Image 1 (cartoon, one colour):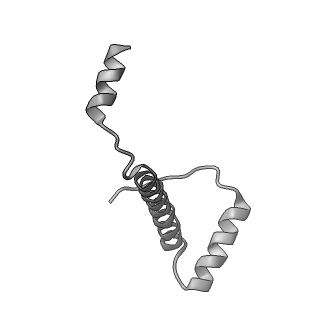
Image 2 (image 1 turned 180 degrees about the vertical axis):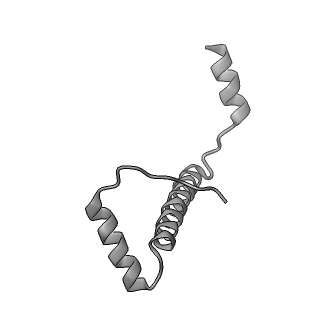
Amino acid sequence: MAQVLIRNVDDEVVARLKRQAERENVSLEQKLRTVLARAAKRDANEFERVTRSIREQTRGAGLDINAIIREDRDR
């Protein structure tokens, strides 16, 4: 597993995260792992949502990729 060192984190941010960790009965380190994992997953979920939306919007549009490429080459 990788290790990450983050410098210059605002003291109040660290204090809030420590309080959250205490309420959840986990270490600050575990709390930060959870926060980072959720943030990364949210980005992946957002990407999937956007690509699904684009697919739905273009479904049945009759796009011919070969024609598009030929048209672009002819410019």
